[in-house]
Image (tube, rainbow, N blue to C red; front, side, top):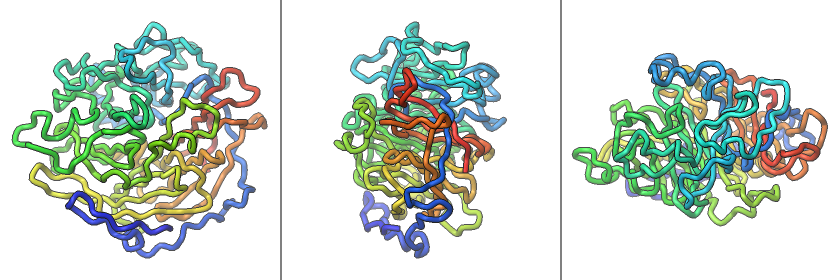
Length: 479
């Protein structure tokens, strides 16, 4: 493990050296059960779907906690029924294409999340323009549907007409997604004009638009730039941010933290930005900083180093998962694990709380990093076992207890299983079930099923011998 350096964090906390944080852990091991010697066991992947340009973030829809709003509200429950856009068996896949739908904002990039049924026996070949009519269009007998896109059917203003961010859509060039299975909705993260432009983070109803009846009507279901910052969105008695920060560069990853430490019960999410900063988003109070630029290795200006598949339209991204409890490994209870693709390492940020004049918020206590020869452009993370039942923390981005996490390596198309203390458990080489090569295709996202039995990965680039395969989803067995 490479030690984190000391930093000053907005005058609130100091970031301690990582070896103190994690109890003197040794360097992460990289050769157990398959190791990193170039002879990793093969993990054979069935091609679920092709024709997904810029395939990026991926997640199972899964089952929402039964007491949550989506399963209990009469206007939302129909969307989780069989064959519908949030049917629990389906997966959501980000793309940088609108699939023919008209842009709501021509100044922002195309982008969508598709809802895909992966249970069929045949590869789904998605038509490039199937969504030309707009809205939650479907194709291939309903096996593929638009969940949300940069299209007028998904404007924040539909349910939040007074929002300062009313002219933003559900997604635009989406790079991350976190599902609040516990007590909320779906949260994509976007880089609408690329890494150097502003970021956006959205709270979406099953219809793919900004949250109806949002706690704060001034931003509704969309945080963007500095338009939803705490202190600027009309909450009584709040005059400024608890910690400075804004969505000032592209949003490249996101995760649920659970209920706010202020006791309000409102959800808080974190969003990673291309400049290496992190913000936290409170559904009522608005947006605060969490860590300043450079805390995570920035992705700005580094596109040529991360693409690796001949596709210049693929925007670099990273992965993040959250540990919220300690069962047996003795680590602090709240840790964010964030991949740093360009540095071939994983950052581990221990969170605490800070009480400020403008509210009680999350803060960073310490930062450490895991380095290993098994890491090769680690572009995304997912829990081996997700927290799927807790009424406060259930999410696709939340680790269940002492669960390991998977790391998707874009550089060499491998998957690493890593413990919460940075030890490499095993490494697998992604291969195709038909035995054909990957060519210039590269893994770009990873997700596990709620029961932990299946892994899905997105790949960008072209799979040799597969027509229309510029962007695909593969299904693999867990290990």
